[in-house]
Length: 125
Image (cartoon, rainbow, N blue to C red):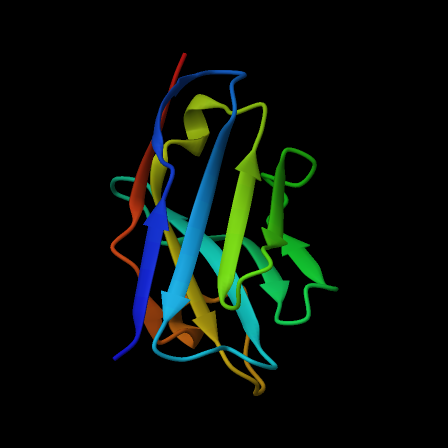
């Protein structure tokens, strides 16, 4: 059984920082990607960032590029998301996901099969 667990959310003032972590167990996403998406109330789930299994390739939404950084840790199937210069519009539930090798759109949440419960990030103005 695959488990994806996110942690590290919380409440922060605008301009502050948070670091999210994600650990997947039960399978690996070798050859594929792990990614972060977010979902704000009344909005569709949107892509935030993705990282290749090797860790050599990273991708970001335009809205977070330059402020967020996705990285792999030394543990297999574990990634972090460092979020700096947070804005109120970053407020959302953040979800971690992953998928193995194959041809798919890594920016489309429908491409992924395994999801965590999410972690709330709230940025106050």
